[in-house]
Amino acid sequence: MRGRELEETILGGPARYTKDEVAAAARVPVSRAEQLWQAMGFAHVEDDAVVFTDADVAALRSLVELVSAEVIPPELESAVARSLAQTMSRLAEWQVGIFKSLLGEQFAVDVATTAQVADVILPVMERMQDYVWRRHLAATAARELAERDPGADERVQVIGFADLVGYTRLIRDFTELELARLIDGFESLAGGVVAENYGRVVKTVGDEVLFVTDNAAEAAEIALTLNEEIAKTDLLPPLRIGLAMGPVLARFGDVYGSTVNIASRLTSVARPASVLVDREVAAALRGRAEYRLISVGPTKVQSFRGLRAWALRRSE
Image (cartoon, rainbow, N blue to C red; front, side, top):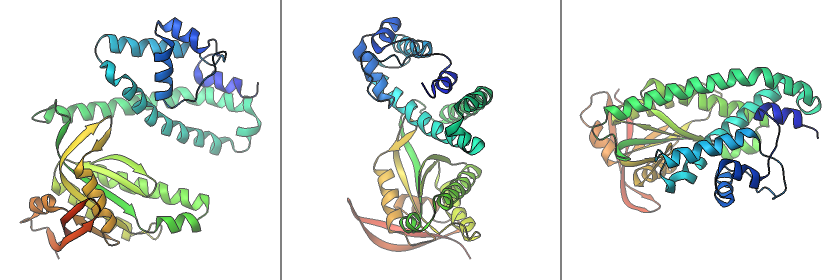
């Protein structure tokens, strides 16, 4: 079958098992194996389809061992699989894009050559993924150890949203290549500014980046610097930015809670090239000579009646 050589190269071996067989080899009920398979975002597999490899058996066994050893609570088994899959799915999309740009038309026409290239490149990518993962794991662990209550999932943080103005129009007017360049430029600039000012990018969704910091001053620097850097380039439209500070629930790499919702709502009502902050961020920054806060009064936003906001600017 066309593409089987490439699939075997990527998966590390040929398909050998049906879902009943892979579940039996891993010593788990088929229903549990199917639940995990679907949690990872994969399509339903027919009972007689031979699509699983030795790597699937090993992975399923490993997950079961982690649950049995109480490293992963049983009730979080599917959530862990789902969170990991969402991250890896996006990474896979990007990597296939690399193969397509590298091989051009050969990617779709000459599958044997694509498989050979994958055989050479995949080990290098795997080593880089392992390195980046370990670096982020070390940094995250260090932050947790520095917290007064490292076991708590909820803590006070500053949430920031930065949203490209006019993105809907750009989608309509730009070619696919122009849009890709804009998104790449935005994500590169935002990632650099956030990292330089001790923040962390939680996620990017097309025209928007969500970031988090441990204090208001770091968030203020990120927001103001983003607008300043955007203004220096003709390639990107201006940003709307909203900042809010309060309790934040961190779960599987994402953040939740009313603080996140407030930051999002402030972003939606901010003017182009401006930064709006909530009461808590304003209070934390008040008295700092490098910033100026201008009250814009109660702000009408969905689900938050009487929300007060301040425009944040640098002191002149």
